[in-house]
Length: 277
Image (cartoon, rainbow, N blue to C red):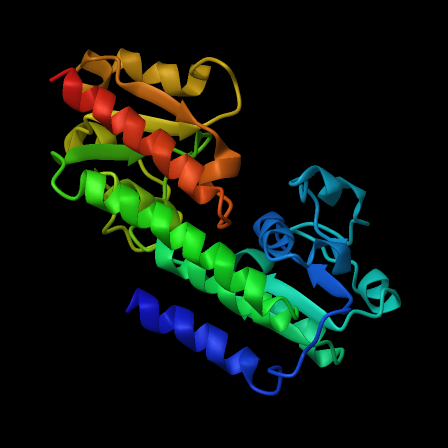
């Protein structure tokens, strides 16, 4: 089902866009989209991007046209874009619909698996007039992904709680790309069956599901305090063994080629947990 949803989101906007060429004026509505555009060679054609589009370094020079909460439509129109690339869940259906009403050429998509990231490289490469580099980057991504799959195909399963923060406690369900990364490394997302994409959860539910490792996104050098707080719950295996780890959120939460760097971090963490058993 994940794959079908992704392809449908791709195919609808592709109608009538197959003839787009290089030399476009592109708006990026997510930091990971900015990364993908640079990866396929379309970075110089980006005329506007949302906040936190900070990778690669050249992306910091792109004019900001808003953030996830508010888009400056007037500024976007003034930039005369030929293509707007949006993230379906992150950009929001209302914003995407509004831009289409304004007559803008909007392509939206929703990657849910690692293979979808490779597909996004191919299709965004084609739409931006950089199909050859898009194909090359996608092939490199798939080769690196296949190496990880081979390495962890028979790995011991490890129960994982991926915590987004503590006010409130939130996680990600099995439909999110982060969950696909966890599975790739031989992990089991303990909240994979939750209904919302980003469910709020209770401490009691974490205690009941008893994860062997708790992982949280943080750029800090040390495990953040909100993650270390789980040491107060010794009935949880992760707390008993101090299996509390941080990962770089830019790697894990951006659906770009750098998600493989995040996957390698997750796989390394789960290997440490296996070795400690």
